[in-house]
Amino acid sequence: MKLSTQILVAFTLVILLSVADSYTNYRLSKKVYLNSQFLAGSEEIIRNSNKTHKTIIEMQSAFRGYLLTDDEAFLDSYFTGLKKVPDLIKDQELRIGNNNTQRSILDSISLLHNSWQRYSEQIIKSRTERPDAYKNLFESSLKKYVGKKINDDIAKKFTRFDRIEYKTRKHHTDMLLESLRNARAFSLIFLILTITVGVLSTIFIMYVTNKRITSMVRLAENISKGNFTIVKDTRNDELTALATSLNTMSGKLDKNIHELKNRNAELNKFAYVVSHDLKAPIRGIHNVVSWIEEDLEDELSPELKRYLKIIPKKTKRMEALINGLLDFARLNVTVPPEYIDTNAMVQEIADSIVPRNFKLEIGMLPSLVTERIKLEQVFTNLISNAVKYTQHDNGVIQISCQTFMHFHEFSVKDNGIGIAREYHQKIFEIFQTLREQNEEESTGVGLAIVKKIIDDQQEYITLKSELGKGTEFIFTWRNN
Image (cartoon, rainbow, N blue to C red; front, top):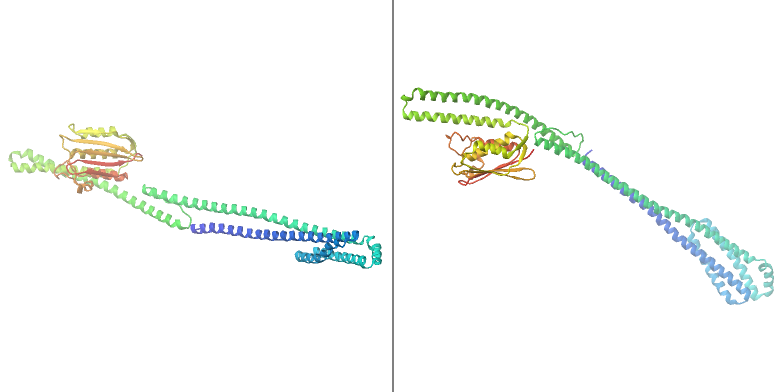
């Protein structure tokens, strides 16, 4: 699966969880809204029921007060109730809607109230207009508690009505609380799932990606160090092409380096053979010249003797060039690193190279674990170069070092003839020398050997010099 697909899947899962969370909360909030609306309406039903019952009770109280006192002032509440109760009952019918049980109870209350209303109207009318009829009604109705029984039935109906409403109200209250609890629970669950999926997806993708990138970086580092390994990558995504390219590059470099090593080995053998074959005729020429000088010394003219003296110089220079070529070829040899006291090593080199009339200053040099032969060759060639290009009567050679976090920076400085700026890079090329070609000690190989060693160690070398103002070679060296 491609990285983009993995990221898309993880992002889709997070979005789906968010959508599910939103939808669940919407459904629960809708339930909360409906239950809240019902509870608000139920509150109005309870309030209207209490108001209606209270009005009926006030009518009953006014009626009884009138019968006891014969004071028509009591009938004000009675007649007010006659107008209000029908409207209150009608309003209550609208509020309860399709609840058949409560509607049946409300109809019974209405019928009972109408019965009580006819009963009370008949008694009030007979008491004011026909005393004889009132007496009969008193005997047949009041004494038998007809009105009281109706009032008691009305009270029971209101009690039952309210009980049903409170029961329904409690059910919706429980549903409201349950919806709120579910909303909180589902929100927490979806939040945890979303965070978990997001975090785990991110960690997984980062782990897989970082692991593979790290393996590719390690492969690149191995390639830079000459260890041409490959990285195993079985996935088929955007990084697979990079891994394949690195593996291909590693394989090609391994093959090329292997071929180069074989060719270098062949060249080294060739150099040894050629140098041996070249030295033989050079020695022969030198011997022939010596024999001529010994056997025909009296017969040679002065000019011929001068020419014969030039030939040994040229042959010695040719032999020096061949030896320098051999030294350059030997640089491919690798030896194990060892602990080196650089101060002692440099002092030993200087004792064998630097003339006694030179002033030698050696600073505090560090101890290293490295290939001795290569570092020794660098110091030998640089110190030898300083001696060659410095006048012996006032020669000064200064060797010092600065230590940084990961490497050491060495300096070999002299007060010799100096090097013109246009030759600063040219002197590191093989067989390039600033001395005359007939001076045997200058072959132009020494600094080329130094440059090759420094490059093989992946270090750098530079110089500071002006014509007539001495030369300072600066190079770095790392501690293994």
